[in-house]
Length: 459
Image 1: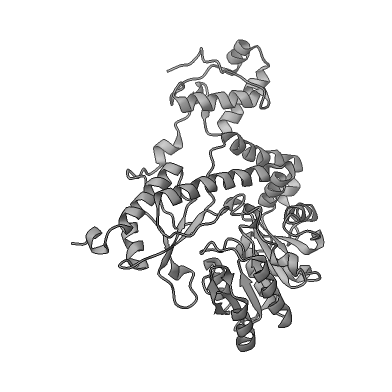
Image 2: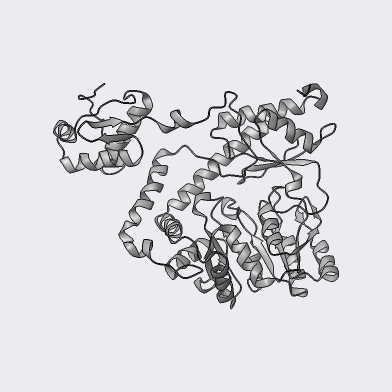
């Protein structure tokens, strides 16, 4: 099959002509106008047809090839490449998805996606220093300055001397705990807490003291009682869009919590993974008590899990110790992904990505409320829901039954420090599309409408 007469419809209003050629190829391949295996016009022939420079067409073909759209065969020409997704993707006829992972939803803005990749490729202007040199633990100053600008929206007045760059939230938590604790020490946590923190604490051989919660989050009175009885070395908490319950602690309670921490001289580790997704979120703990709070702001939820970058604001005078702990545990954050994060933030692209995630999350919350009319707790800005399981169902039976039909959710046991409530967490971002999410939630809702014995497949 050949396409010697193929000629793209070009529009330069959104950027260079070579990108318009690549975009036209993508559009015609997606629409079926260019089928897999189609031989494209030679670069010289297309340049003549379009009356543009040969080098412009060459760059357009190179861009399309980098996107996996076309491939060149030596001595034969350029062909539309077989789409990997159609060859290797395992198709689930039911369209159901694993909702056990709490991932930011994939948005449909192809132009923004392209520019995200372009920003990564544009880093070549930094030369071999970025690729062939180690950097300081805690990040080079230019990345720390960018991180400070990002954090200052939530933490007015924070300075770059107090900000470090770590290898994701896990790397940051490991480093901070390494500074604040020793094996055998006790750390206070919410009675339902982030499994990643449990993992780090277990690795460091720490004891976790669970604190009672209500509908507004952690109870300051429970924290004070633990300070008296357990003499903890730190408090770890997630005040905004708590994982898994989705609760956000109101400002007055945050102040009460800080008053307790100050009274007993207990440092606080604030996990603010979702803060950037909630424009009207209450003031962070670190803004109330910068001398007491270690503020961890991962980019995994608000930008991209693939970056593995977290920004850490530490109390004044603690930067060197935390940087040394980063060196001891992870050596340093990947300079390449840190540079990508900085480029996205500097160009304003990070704000666009975050806004797209927020818009898609809002759509999925609407789907949850329309498709699953049960008592599922969910909050604006987040992409997970907390579903109490009502009798005659139990959390274990519900998780097992859902898994048998290809739907994954997480039982409360993964988060509970002591007794686990009858509840599951639902990740709304894992589904590839809103339609997939609707189908999966419909199955969940239908299952809950039946008695467990009615829906069993055990023989």
